[in-house]
Image 1 (cartoon, rainbow, N blue to C red):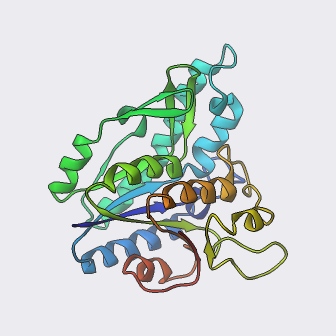
Image 2 (cartoon, one colour):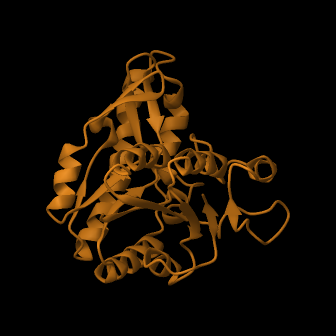
Length: 264
């Protein structure tokens, strides 16, 4: 059975969330280089890459309250502006990978996911499956989404990965890596991180968790841990590691032990 790595590049690590459209070009270029190098060394494994919305779509999503659905007269036009911002950052990431000679191909979650009242009811993944079989590297991203009941909503990259992991676990060995601006899930008031989080110690861990620096409409680290625990029920382990330490992402992609938090 072929392995599948779901690799998220967090918006908080490649953008400055305090500034609209604040891009950390040097960090993005280095991370893409590490991933491109590690990919060449991977054996019997495919990669799906995801990028967060960072200071691009989170700002407009907060302005139009897109995560809440159609709440006022501006909601419909706002949905379009949020989508535009999400695509902008994804296209920047896409171009960086192409420049590193990685054969990436972008897939919009809003085009393959049917949602009703915040819950996924259908996924159309055959084009993505075909892309993997043809040696391409799919890229997804946090995306505003059409909701049959609420009108619209926001699917974070974590939420998209949740759907993809549960779909692919039937035919693949799946693991997940979240590249963050943090070393992992920090213990409140301490410089150390939780090495492992499970359903058993989550009540304790939750007391240490908050949201995110800057604007984040999806809930920051607490949301990330909850989504990871959701797929842990299917036997899928996730890692949260820093993307600000050179070499760490490459090592993690290759399965080496690095500083971070594992959620199983």
